[in-house]
Amino acid sequence: MIDKIINKSIYIIMFIVPIIIVPFAYTSLAKFVVLLICGLILFVALFNKRKELKFDLIDKILLLFWFIICLSTIFSINKPVSVFGTEGRFEGLLTYSVYFLTYYASKYYLEYNKKLQIYAIIIIVITAVIGIFQYYSTIYSSISYAKSTFTNSNFFGNFLAIVVPILMSLYINSAKKRYLILSGLTFFALIISLARSAWIGVAVACILGIIFIVKSKDKYLYIRALHLICLFIVLFVIAFKSADFFNEPNKIATKFLQANNSILESMENGELVNSAGSGRIGIWKMAIHLTAINPILGFGPDTLAFAGSYYTPVDMYNCCKASGVIADKAHNEYLQYSATIGIPGLIVYLVFIALILIKQKDIFTNKVSLTLSIPIISYVVQAFFNISTVGVAPIFWLLLGLIQNEKFKSKMNI
Image 1 (spheres, helix red, strand yellow):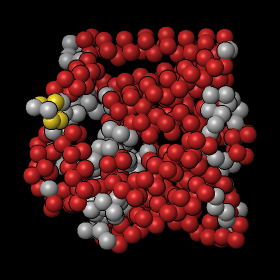
Image 2 (tube, helix red, strand yellow):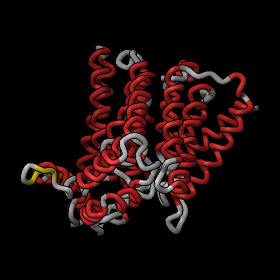
Image 3 (cartoon, rainbow, N blue to C red):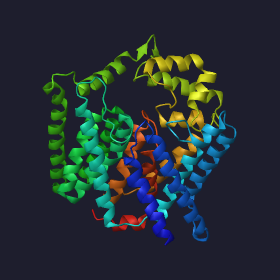
Image 4 (tube, rainbow, N blue to C red):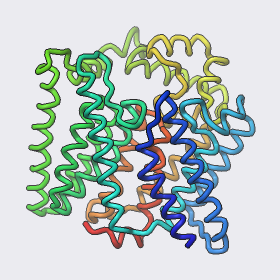
């Protein structure tokens, strides 16, 4: 019964939290509340199974990371924010605790069930279709609204950076046409999300997939990869030309030009221009400066905006002017950790991720290992330019646990 409760809670985190959407800009709060409820259920369930809990080296490193976050919260410049998170972000100590519980539960207790595939397909279709509809319903606007159920197009990109590599791997390795269709649908959504960080993450995943195909020397894998390439080219052309059809400025072309201009114009008098990368460079500089001020424990989870306004008010003003928004996140998860939790916390987190990936020694020879590894790598790459969000990060932490769940992996039908 307890195992069933754990599995049902994980299902809610995996399938319900991403699609929660409520009016009046309370979507993030709603996701946060549901996540906390599931986390509480997982905590009680695991507490009841405390006598059988086990912790390997990777789990102990994660416990160390959680302990550092606790210390950072205790010495935070804004304790309530460090516990609950900034309004609209909600990534404080409580949320991190739920992430870690999700990781542990998926690693040791998530059971394989054929219904998982059905639920996953339903959620993927819902989010992709909503995103596509949003984009084309605002084709006459200069602002992109392809954000689906994630409140922001970059967050939608976070989700797609995980989903697209999984679907591509599933099609190449299983030859099931439904995965080809889903790959096309989500790839199209990825393009019109205009989330360049997600584009980069998926590109890296594709490179790893190519290595797998080349090493396999299986002609059928080559053929399926060619199917995906042809489909993606057609979809890219459709997405690229759609704005021309409506006689409107091409948002996709604009994003490519912005990326190119950011590279060309990012240097001025030998220094990085703050406005480059949609203001990211300025925010990164501020985060690095804050890290230097308090490198051991940072300023507390999710307190970047408070620390920036207090210790670097000029930089904060310039960042807000360059990006047009309050710099409450570093737009780089690793700089976010260093500034808010401290360098030791960042190092422990990187070691934790590295050990999990190193453990997958058969990534280029095993279909299941590839399918579960490349979405993690894609997410890790896009995290250099994006932020963590309560609507997507739980899926990432779930995958980190799932990739170590040998019982689950043995039953995956690929």
